[in-house]
Length: 179
Image 1 (cartoon, helix red, strand yellow):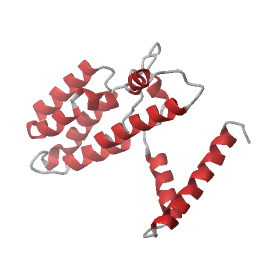
Image 2: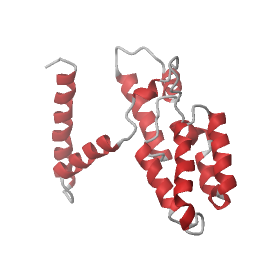
Image 3: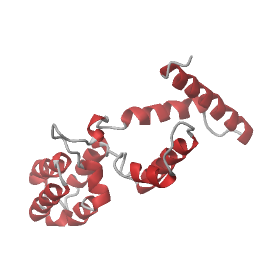
């Protein structure tokens, strides 16, 4: 995830809708909504881009301290608990007080939870199995948009979307061994 609230909500709603329509899944909408709570993992690429962007703002981070800022900020990604995340965030704001508003946004529990993964051996956090970046999915979206083209009449655009959906459906059935 790229930490956008709209993207999180859209992903949750798509997840719930998909499984509600699956006749083999017996979970209720409430059970599915609870299941979405721990399935998101933040994209390290997007987080690192934010760190770099803020690190270049001279009013926040002096030039000679950029590397120290980046190092401390990136340590947020390796926190194993929310408490540890908050401690690291406090260290960051103590050294870079002008970055406080930026750090405060990341320390919101629902945002911080996108970065915090329990990596211990006995952890049941399945998010550690997810890729650290969403760039492959974003590349797939770009590929789809490229094949579809731009500035179509409505019906032409819908036909192109339908054709892409059929391709994805064939891929799904192939992966599931149904073709």
